[in-house]
Length: 264
Image (cartoon, rainbow, N blue to C red; front, side, top):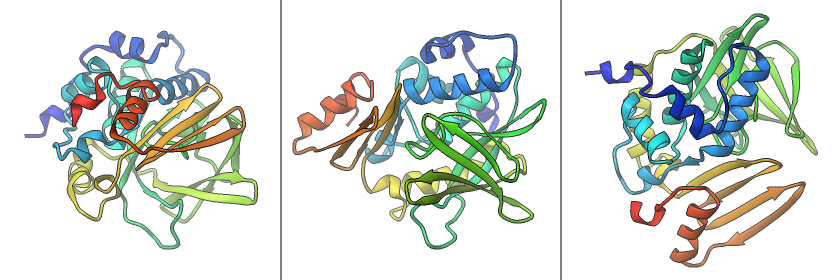
């Protein structure tokens, strides 16, 4: 029943071509960071299938077909799963981890996010291509007090307790906790029930409004509900989307999803 979650990546070269990045022989932090940045630029975070009430499959071949061949995006359970398969194909020691989103919350939220961990020669690194704007555009070392500047933003790693690590980012007025994760390795099947909840339950944020995000070379763009935002070269602009035509124009042009309107 679950064997489709563990099948081989159909076409490594096609995936790398989708990311517009070359294969390298050395599995180091520099190449890992380049892969993460390319993934966030070329493949958008999006919940179009959830909003149109279509089942979100985590089968490797189906996610590959959607993201690589159809040039779509996806959300964390799709994107971080596919990316983990690619990392393993390239020679990285990579595995999934359970995460909870802390940003914007004053309580302990449930575990509803999937991240990835990669073991390099000098330790463990957190990697994420499936969270949208607040995610770091590179890997962050899992080490107490570790800080790394990524695309003009400083991220910090702290040990929350015996089991959990907290990833924070520096804002103008202080530090913002983004998420927590555990380093206990998870397997693909662990995310099947969480994926069902996130894609179907009425309390899930993903079924309540459209959510799209893509990293730019010098910033990022997002389309949350009817608000399109762009931050580029330090300049932030917003547009209230008032028509269906304009909404799908943005989805196709800015988030690079071909034939988006036909997906409804």
